[in-house]
Length: 154
Image 1 (spheres, rainbow, N blue to C red):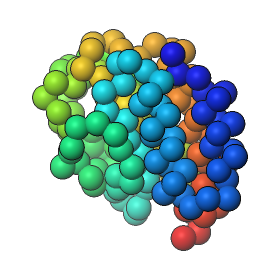
Image 2 (cartoon, rainbow, N blue to C red):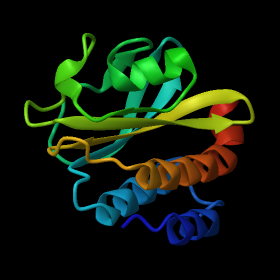
Image 3 (cartoon, rainbow, N blue to C red):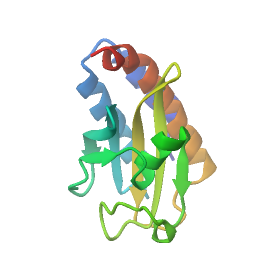
Image 4 (cartoon, rainbow, N blue to C red):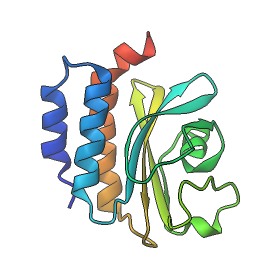
């Protein structure tokens, strides 16, 4: 089970470190926290695209996602977290891996500004329960608070 309190505390303790180190640790801890979390990554917003900054899982060519495309891009375009229990039913799916069956994208915000997305894929259908989404939301909130000022004005 994803222990968002422990992960959040660990990320707060790293607040003075470089953003890449914090992002890597967040991805690492999220990946360790869910047995069905087969691919975990953080995309950061750069203009009209999301750019992959840190990930654990299978290699992907999706290092740059236009806003509005795929689950992460759609989440940013709509300004909300998205949990897709069956990605096969999606029209605008961007395939990181043909084995991915479900996906969740949780916005990282600094104040009201979207600065990125935590994106998690699973090889199981319906892998992400409301408790997983809530834990990812807590972690995304910490990332937004610790990294937002550095990323927004970089």
